Length: 107
Image (cartoon, rainbow, N blue to C red; front, top):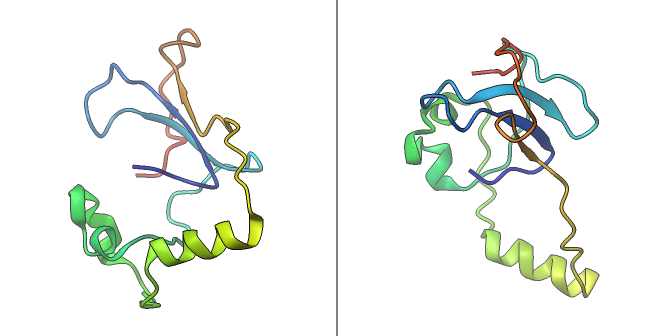
């Protein structure tokens, strides 16, 4: 899944659903289990597509009827350029040495 505004530490060698070691927002604040967060996504994912069934349980879902392609096109018109620099949203524990598994990832 592509993300924005989060930092994820993953163990790519762990079994599925056990790979997330830590999850923080872009400022470094821990994402807290049980707390509510606003999420923007497409209709397919919000209906639980690709196995992301937790999104189908979302509260206060608002369908803006806006196509993602239209949002991107408008952004490009306004900005006229993109900054393709890396922001290191994903980090692999496998390449940074051993990391103890923690409960820092929200499910």
